Length: 346
Ligand code: GLY
Image (tube, rainbow, N blue to C red; front, side, top):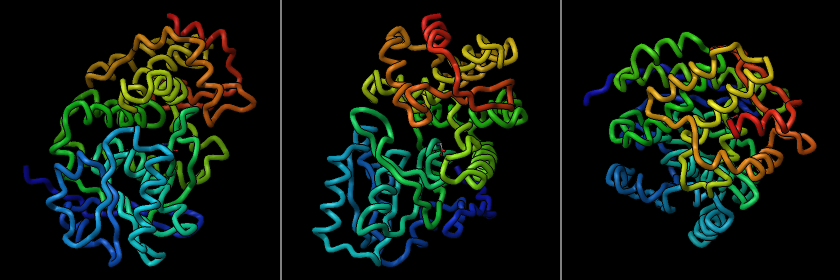
């Protein structure tokens, strides 16, 4: 498919400066890599796009999947960089989805106390969410993203045509986050998505999501005031589901889709969310082929335990970004465990 590439950039301003998020053809993204680049990617992206990587740039490959966001893999990449005598003049280039971006970004944040990095997100999920905002992290057995940093990239080059080769499940996985932006802050986006889920309109949709995300991360770069935390609609339950199912059964967006359905129920149960909103959320997600329930929801104790360890929790009390209606949301941190248990069981 010949894709029209939007040339304008979205500038994200942060405490250390600014970076641009821009749509580029894959080949252009490669041409723009600075001298001294070192690529980190995964085996799947290597198989699909490795032939188009810039010649002569060293490549470190990790297995595909959330399992690579672990201390052992982090340590292995650090060792490989050090054995190759990579120094502070280097730039790490993360080519891949959220896992690669988070792992490579955290390596960049910590190797020799920090070297520059560029994100080249190839999955829809990474393009609309994880590549923008400077959150980088790895998981531990006790929780997702428990070790990490706020470390802004030098640039985000969205390799737009990589979406054309994305398998349907991965595409729907990213669309979960796209619907989320609509549910939390843009009812118009929900309308657009409801009218047409067409993949050929995706560039405008991705752009809108990045604008929305940029506005939140600029307002609350370090996730301290609650403004950025609203991006976590569906994530308190979603992260807990990922944890109790061992990070492999569900893709992140699938777990968040189930989480959004349950958290919409929770909002209705406590009287915060307009009646009927949870039905709308379920209908939208189902139209995208996303799950809205999962058998592991019956493991209420394990899920609540995981929610108590969520980064938004304070003193072990889980917090939730809940929608008040489609297009509006609120961070809530005083919900009783009995209400959470009830919606998980329902
Ligand atoms: N993905 C949520 C955030 O960047 O804050």
